[in-house]
Amino acid sequence: MNSSTATTATATPAGQFDLAVCIGRFQVFHHGQLALIRQALALAPRCVVVLGSAHQARSPRNPFTWHERAEVIRLALPEADRHRIHFAPVRDFYNGPRWARAVQALVDAQLASVADAAHPTPRVVLVGHFKDATSTYLNDFPAWALHAAPRQYGELHASDLRRAYFTSPPCDMEGTLAALVEHTPPATVQFLRAWAQLPVFAQVAQEWRQLEHEKALWASAPYPPVLVTVDALVRCANRVLLIQRGRSPGLGLWALPGGFIDVRETTWQSTLRELREETGLHLLPGDMAHALRATHLFDHPDRSQRGRVITHAHYFDLTDRHPPEVQAADDAADARWVPITELAAMEDQFHDDHFHILDHFLGLTD
Image (cartoon, rainbow, N blue to C red):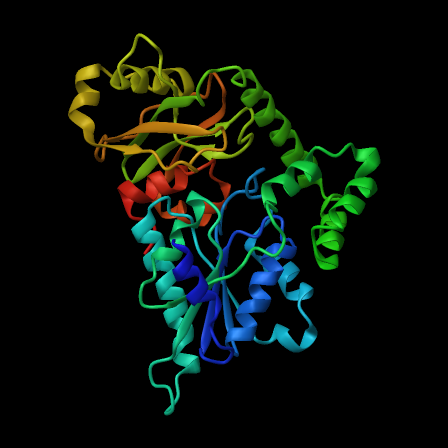
């Protein structure tokens, strides 16, 4: 975005719009994000706050549910402004065009309530600021005006606040929270204090430490590592084969059988090996080749918390035969055939983007 565009966008007159839109994950909600929402409320009588990474399992990147984030944001605003905010949760999808369509649909649902005789076509403004490659979504809605807000709090990143929070020694949590006061609204600090008392805090903190340990092993590499994995979606009699992870990251979450590719294997060989090692499923290679319906590369930069991980997913359909016996092994704590009709209700129990891999092949969401 060039400077002339930014100057024009930030000079938007107050009251010119009927609806403002702010999009973010808000984990942890901080002063910079609060400033964005305040600017949105200055531009329009109502604001839709789109909460990304909704319906995800709790993790170091997404520790808080969208309901929790909505309440923190609501409490950070003056009481007189709280009724002017509508919260709209959206999945990540890990697919840019599909994600943009979902956001558009959420905002369109709110437009009907602001349309009137004077403004049959409500005027919408998207409020955000350009910081890095993660800000390109601001260009995905050409029908809306864009208000490029100045960054009032400099290089303030929610990931840094999460790091301070989850690496804080239990005996010094109050000291950590005192340091966060400078960067976060009082409602955020109060929420973090209470959340640290929940059992889930220890679980997420342990996951954070494990991920930091893994990343430290690659710290001396000349280039950021790009890891390659395989995943297997095996369908049989309208069930799919899932494993429950027995170790971090994603301890206790459901996932597709899979793992890292061996340096002397093809993706096909690695897929069959991981299936055998984690579930005991060991059909003849010819039978598996006959059952293969599709392959797809999942390479979104944010799909894995481990870093840049590209996976080759193989979709097998064993038709309506009786599901073969399976037995969890290796780093899987459980392996079972799960009815496809139950998968949508399990969305917040899946590791990384594995629910979205299932959705890609099986069409689980609208």
